[in-house]
Length: 126
Image 1 (cartoon, helix red, strand yellow):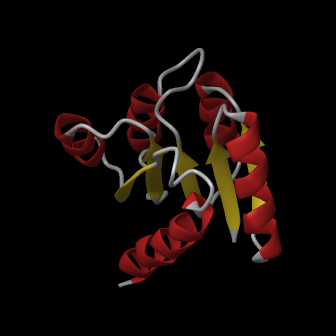
Image 2: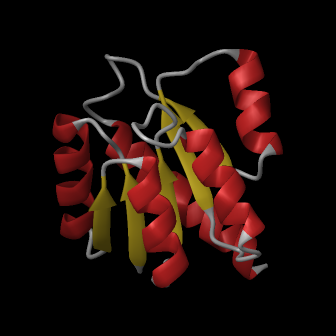
């Protein structure tokens, strides 16, 4: 499975990229919204893991653009934005799931993201 990892934090991104590769996923890691949009337009992915606090183009705008492409790419938001309105907004924009990444959770969010990725893909295949 080919995953688009969209995360600007180098420590988190490196840990998640390695965890995904260890689990036999092919990973393209980008660190800003503009590059994420370009990658999604030009490559075929089976899952996107999306941080919202991105430079250049906010993660919500990335998600809007991905949905405007008309592709059924499963997107899981993984972010520190924990407000109820943020969650509702992310899901209303078309995210398949929304994970809140706190400092305590940051060290292990990749495992949760993998579980959510599997669930998102299962929903798409039903």
